[in-house]
Length: 55
Image (cartoon, rainbow, N blue to C red; front, side, top):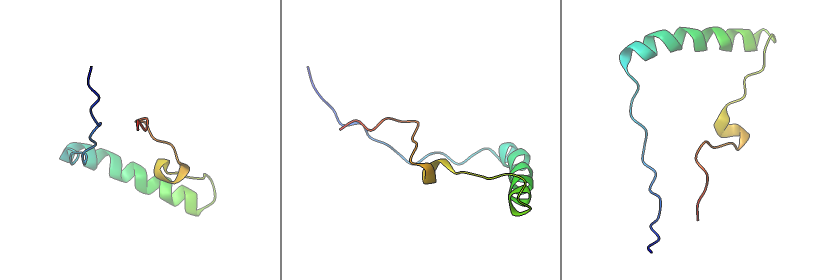
């Protein structure tokens, strides 16, 4: 049995069509946050990670 370190790499760049769809949605959410209608919490600020930390 061997133990190997898990290697995390940098994510790929998103497809162009995904950016065209998601950026306007994100801008609208940011406007709503400025008006005080919603509160946005980014996952990297919240200490949550979808990949567990394996020592």
